[in-house]
Image (cartoon, rainbow, N blue to C red; front, side):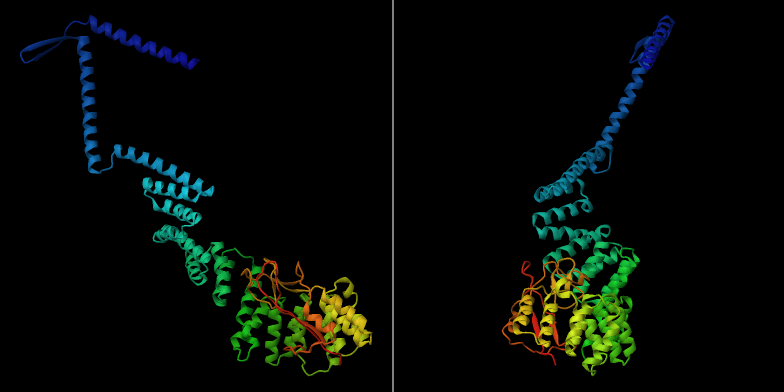
Length: 496
């Protein structure tokens, strides 16, 4: 209210000053005489002031009209003017509105509408750095991969958007199944943005699938340096890659480098079962039994596994059954209550024909965790102790419907593998296999039928001299996923 009152008072004061000035000019004698073409004009003092004000306004208006004419000529000539800036602002406003509408359409899943809005935004903005990405994503959503690829290629040609274009084409190649081209593009994308975690993971997976172990180890080192991978996880995965690079150690003609990689893999991750078994065999090939035993004991203490027991048996291949039982006692003391320890000692005592000790070693395993292996061992114990055929077949019947037991299972897709591998054969995930019981355990099937009919098979498997009764690990059928067809072999040797 005070401000309004003040404005009114100022207005009244101005009017009063003007009125007072006009009255003074009216009372002032004299004036201005102007002669134009022989005609004389006499203006009073007040008229002279008014004429001067009109003249000033006319001059100002003339300059404005002249400026407008000059601006129009420059606009028609293509120069930047206030008029052109005005029109440009209008186009820019329409372009950004179309871009915003296109992003909303893309978020709503309307690919065709997003493409139309992107084209409209490009028309008004003429800024491909903004609109090409929207066009590519909208085209992908609409299923127009050709147009999306063209948009990504335009992004690649621009230095500021090259990474976005390379990454977009890489993802297209992945969806098309062209993993080799996708791997090359991922390498270029990682060179442009070394800290991009998604590109790091994609490249690592593709390199592992292509068995490019050296490149995968470089990518893994990059993940460690950029802080996208904890050091303990890095050591584990680096061990997996080193192990994968040295898998030829089990074949004849393994190079010294491959042997060193097997030992390095065990050093990086002592609890990695395949690495420990391979490193132990490397030491054995060099005549270093103590080193092999030390590696196997350390791994057994972390996780008992049949592969470790097999490698431990290879330390003294020519020993008798009784000598092998005594030597395995030192291994069993590291994890005496573990199920694998109980099973291994039961198998060894069956081979040594010490059936009471085999029963004691097996303990309550057939009641607590009755899988096919434990139940088949129990059948062998009963047979060795002279039990009736009905009792033996009863145990084998239970084994027929029992789960297989621990296997190599992918933590991501639960696919079961016959052997350890760095990459899941089903979902292509890297370092996701764990030795565990499957969530949906596969039961023994026709493989045990020869045991029920009294016709046990005695097929020899490679290195299967640890136990008299051993269930060999084979590919597992995943019925729900339909991913692969696998088979199992069951083997029962008569007690010596």
